[in-house]
Length: 370
Image 1 (tube, one colour):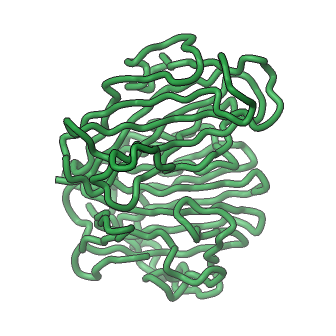
Image 2: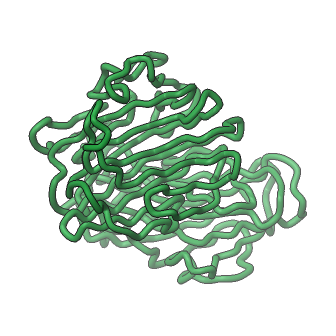
């Protein structure tokens, strides 16, 4: 899905089961035919209008089913944007770099893009996933962080065109704090997906641009530890990525297929009629082994938790796990504007410890609406 006006920003609406989630720009790649090429669809074109630099819509992995876009084998595709010329914006995209990629994969934001006239183009953000060095590198600012492979990772850019500034976050951590442009325009001009050589590979999904300030991020107001035993940290540990994690270890399980960590986090929103609800945690395992993490939101109508992220591998490296509610979102808001999320961790293979420990740096809900 892709909605944008050539002359002004329109609100793109994604209807899911009767609920409407509103974005200024939305591209989830799900309305195109699987295995088709992106150039010529949804406003996407090749770099300098070269139609040989294509990317394919695939269903081998995705955040929102069925498709993501795969950049590989010299992919170089561009989506020009119009209407983003003032104010504050938040751009988000999910990126997956497989460990089989051995080259560079570039995610680029332009403040001005001119086909076949490179001196007139101006780059604002150029995030390079460098598989050979296992780093993510913003070429425009010089900032570097460890590259996360074989997992969906969120790239978030907080763009303030009023004061000419951008904050770039990778996997929830601030990577770049710099000027948006130094010789171009105060605008969001284009998105580029570029695979530097035939061995480069990256997947992208759920690219959105939203006005800043319409989404609130909530820290939990209560914790309910239903399974597992607390080792360190407390309710406040969920609120900030400050090296003060909430650590929960395996204590007792009915059988090995049941989660050994199950914890509920309660939130209070100021938006009783939300247009979007998200739930996320930044987590890792302290001991090695095979573990999976899932996320749910309490459906206040059914009394059951609806999965918003199915089981996903969690390793000894911190990663951000996130999911969004769909359908009638009022079902997830209860008395006193309460929202409840659940995190579950399950052992699915060998573990280096008889009592494995899960470490959680953050747990938060995001709620959009008026």
